Length: 214
Image (cartoon, rainbow, N blue to C red; front, side, top):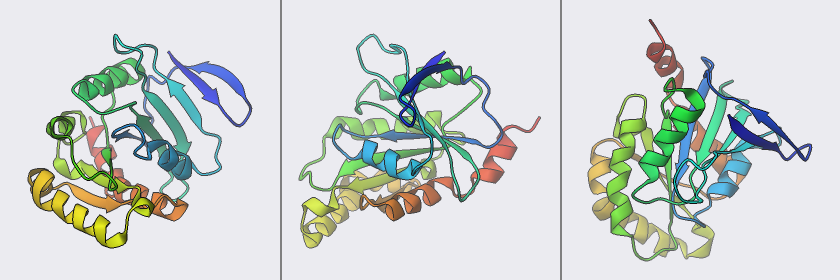
């Protein structure tokens, strides 16, 4: 049972998300606190009546997984963006437990959006190892389903940002990019959010049909 809050009406309702529809796409949005995840989710959902759900103490700590559900106007998919409070050793388990709790093992992640502040002049090493583990939760367990998303471009000079992005690609993210992961520079606008959603939804229709056949 997931507890949902609909900000449009200011009322709380209870609902159970146990049977993913054929057009449902579940996308994880992960990254450090303050990396722009909430802003992206708000812009991606647009002016629709979004539902924001809080998982009930999935982990032993007070951390929560928050899921926002909305209808994508371009693809027609029902989108569920799953936001974790931070990214560390327990993120994979947190997401796995959330999927089991809300979808009863009948859903996988269609994509993972990993948010990284381009304004950070260093990369914390430990979480980078965990990016690869997230493939296990993806429908086809491929690195191509992971999009490495840089944010906060308005807080650095463009030349500085490009230099840092180049370093990320050639060093910290080199291995997973070689495995098929892609990068995206998110500019914190509605159009940029739409572009990122389009990238995440590429080839989803065939993937969803194939995964539920038989």
